[in-house]
Length: 140
Image 1 (tube, one colour):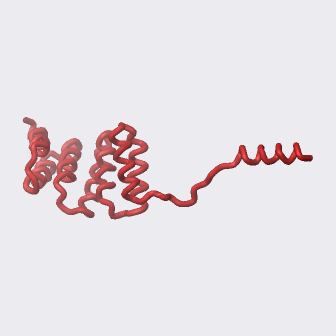
Image 2 (cartoon, rainbow, N blue to C red; image 1 turned 180 degrees about the vertical axis):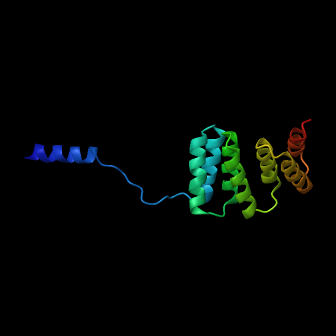
Image 3 (cartoon, rainbow, N blue to C red; image 1 turned 90 degrees about the horizontal axis):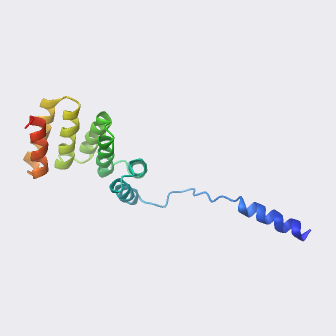
């Protein structure tokens, strides 16, 4: 009988699963983790973390911006544009978001709109990166 109980306990414990019922990480922690995954080239994992961050805090504009970056890297310019526009709704007139938005709009063939967007980014903060985006859009 004792052997049977020990075998039952061993079998029961070896098949046990740990289930986490609540997510212990904050939205900011998911955002940070997503950024780490993105830097390592783990785009799928990064995207999952950014989405978790947004489930915890729908107003976390940086998660929208970073999701846009993932979609842009994947070549899904329409989804990237959608995320950048949502980021701008949450964080108006951010030059980095505008720069990236200009680039994906240009990649979708809307050159004049892209020029207008990049010029707005440059008016907010003139940088070498934004000037490079402008040159690409202008075809120079």
